[in-house]
Length: 361
Image (cartoon, rainbow, N blue to C red):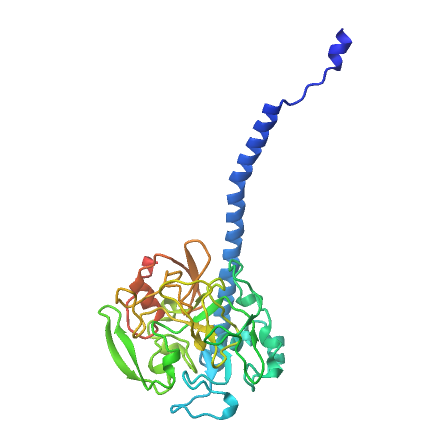
């Protein structure tokens, strides 16, 4: 009898097994958010470092050329006339060569080998550049962006592939954009001779300016079509002026290569305020208010990071609670979704003379 008792083997009952499984499930449930938070923290750090690289390259570019790169390069015209080879858009007056600010920074960001493959003397859409402009460059990609990092096809106003000289065009993606300032000068910076701008963000006072194809008559930020901004032009202070920021591909497509005349940027999701916009938004964004840009209540629109207008021409980040911006001095700041709207507008202009209280960030 004793030997039989010694042969008895004890095991888990069904209830005990279910309790153990439940405890493991609770522990996994508690651990998973911590793991996800740790991964996002790593992605945030990587994004910040890459934006800091962009800022450093921008500083080095200025050291070499005594100016910052253009928002994008376009054949300059004051009357809409241009050689056929530059394929000028008759509405926006965007034209070749189209190379953007990020392409200009490549030699200062360990991109010398890629630059050697680019024919910068030709438009970005030239067949000689077809493969290179579609390159994926990690420096211009934020790990937290969920809309993809592969090349994208350039679209026209109807959302169809844009055809230039019988070919469609693919551009390498960027999750970083340059600041045009408070004002935008996209479609209205061409055949429209004049434009309306907000001259006072505190009173919403507006004025009419003569454009004649010169985006510099409208832009109050460091980057615009054919811009040649210098340190001395940033009279509000480089440490208080936004130069770069995030724009996740979850909202719309941006490129490091530049701008193609006739292209349009289309939102991947819609809000009451967003829609397609002209080719300049492939590389540039603005903060608002912009002349004539009003919300459904008739008020001027200022759109900081992740503002629910979800314009293709605003900054947009998938980091929790805000996004990164690169300042003119090369520093990187994290800006909350709930940043004061007037403060955001003040930070976005470079020469409006606003006094900024940075502790409000």
